[in-house]
Length: 338
Image (cartoon, rainbow, N blue to C red; front, side):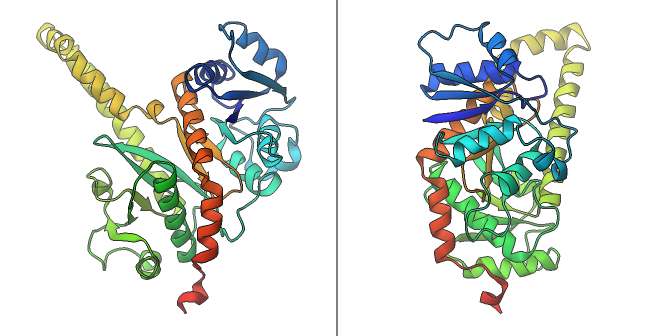
């Protein structure tokens, strides 16, 4: 495998990006192509032991910041690390691309400037992998499409089902649609229309899934529009941070609770590892014509390494070809259900 790492992606680039690339090259055996400011990238690489590791550096004299608008990055920064990295995938010089950079910009560059959409895809979807009781739940869309049509959500379900099978090894993934109630009549008109479509598709559709049920192993793939999906994961991040801070505060509130906290530290560490997003790394941008994994801006070296792992899995499983073939066989247009 040859995986491209956007060395200018994370909030603290290129430190965690390079460190994660070194970990990936050492632990996974991949060839890692670091794309970014060559001087800065090589200076960071010199801090690590890279003996016998397969790491290459490709120069890109521009970088996308978190403040760059997706609508302007295509023409405004054509030599960015995102452009250069994705073009390596497009030209067959790499098997996948990962970035912890500006999500909107990555979507725009992938869809409009480099890889473009898989034939038949209406809109790409940004996915998110949530750990629930030791299992993975795929959420999509979580931010690429704020306003959606029912046929787009139906395609999201198909692409999520393929990724669950091909990338995560689930034999018969359960597909649900995020709603404000588990009863079939709940939800808005978009949910009702999408439900009618999903019932007719060759999917293991389990119906409506409430937000609390996302965390109770009711479905393996949960579909929503990007507006609702983004609010769900950001609410989860905020609630998790609040809970952890409250626990730390209460543990330190007295000598007895401090001692109890020390004794319970192994259990706390296991819980932290279970919910730590770094253990997942990132998730694919589904629907673009190449493997693109998006990580969080706050990614550390472990998260970057696991983003590489996700890219390897998707590429090895032939994810792009599987989506292309499935969509050709399974129409999801509104007229099909007319």
